Amino acid sequence: MTDTSLYADGDRTAIRIERRLGHPPEKVWRALTEPSHLNQWFPFDVEPELVVGGAVRFAEKGEGQTLSGKITELDPPRVIAYTWEEDHLRWEVRPSDGGSLLVLTHTVADHYGSASFATGWHACIDGMLDVLAGRPVADPDRAAMDAGHERFIGVLGLDAGTVDNTGEGWRVRFERQLVRPAEAAWAALVGPSVPVVGGPVPDGCLVAEFAAGPVAESRAGEALAYDWLFDGAPAGGVRIELGQGTGHGARLVLTQTGPADRTAERDAALKLWRDRIERLAADLAVGS
Image (cartoon, rainbow, N blue to C red; front, side, top):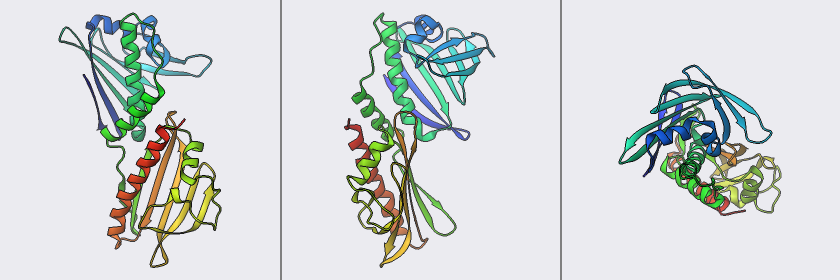
């Protein structure tokens, strides 16, 4: 059984994952706390000092960075929780049907990275199951990871746009973690053209119902902006930005602004840009 959900934890987001494991709690506890087991499936090599307040050292596998944390809760063999830089992880093991129910709560500041984190943790727990079964830990399948990421986007409600009142009108905003780097996303948006200021907006950066003025800003792989037109005059702006994401890929932020009395256009922007971003994400997920 697998269950994944999000909930607000103050101004942060908590990702809750439940997995039913066919192994007793004591065995799962060893996989969570003993470095000889833990470091076979955890994304970093971990050295925990198993007392409340004890230090936790996270060393990136290979010649990478070292991060730090602290044990915040410890109740063997039921609960271990610790910080990991700005994040917090809480692992709970419950007896269940002759095996265990593993509950992970990962509290993060990056709400829109939640699908990436959930995808990564499910892959890690798959690796833990290999360790528990005495098998070598299998490398994750990239295509399966991408498909899982896109599924979590929908399951966790991360595909929806938001609407803000700017004081001058409305602003529709989408933020989406992608599974490919910015260069690939940029190419999928603009095609073979090189958008230039004053030139036409590439078709991949447009949606139906909104006529576009000329490109107002173009920075390859980073940003493109233009005005949208109503009755031939500028009515608001569209801006597409690509930035650093979770490591899974680039982060897309798309905004469209408009006047307060154009509510039909606001609602259309919410639907049409959601559909356009879904197509972009699907194209990238099946790409190389």
